[in-house]
Length: 304
Image (cartoon, rainbow, N blue to C red; front, side, top):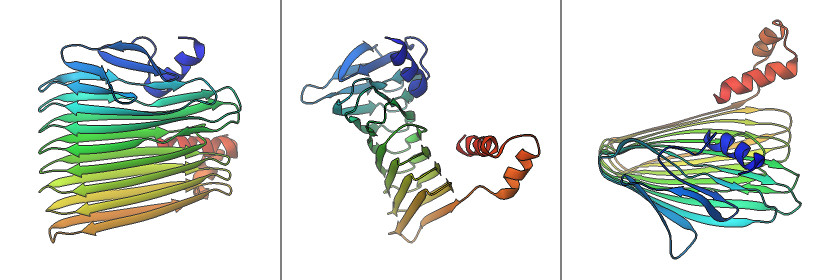
């Protein structure tokens, strides 16, 4: 691992050294490090690029890291990862992708992740995206498919806070009885960058619930699109909240849809898009901050 590799891994996975527990580190289309154990097994797929991550039933307080980095210009890849989470387990999964594009050709990573979460299992999934390098395109478009069995819970934390030219994030989920899904999303776009988010959650089981909280900041001439579709097919609860700060000549579009197909479904959507409040800027400026620094403090607090 060279300096650039280490910097990317630190930004997307908080890795300063080889992680404890199971891991698979992918660089420029190849696995460059892997460790499995009796609790968590990582297996290379035979029919396409990607891995199967098998977490045994009852495994608790364990983690697995599967970061991806790209440091070549012109590299485009699609990677398929399947997670099989055993019943009654409690696990943390750290993923994410970092791109350093040193040339003039587009570099792209599309991660297709499928989660099969067993009964009463708990999953915390952390996915961060980051890119730097030249002005060449840096594209990250993840697709996440989630199935939560009875009593399963999953928290999905996603962040894209710099450098990505274009991203289309698609998340589809099916929740069974007493299953719970929590999604926290943070996005920052600048210059001419574009980011799209599409959520489709099917609340199929009785007492299933979903909470989606999206925070985003759009600067310069960047563009963001947020699309959500929550379908209540049983006695259930769904709450979607989309808040965005708009700066300069940026544009943000929010398209909510809630579909109650059961009389006992309770579904809520909230959206707010606007500029930074003037009184907040004035308050910070009176403390000695410039307008630019004051805006940055507010943005950091909003995205934290």
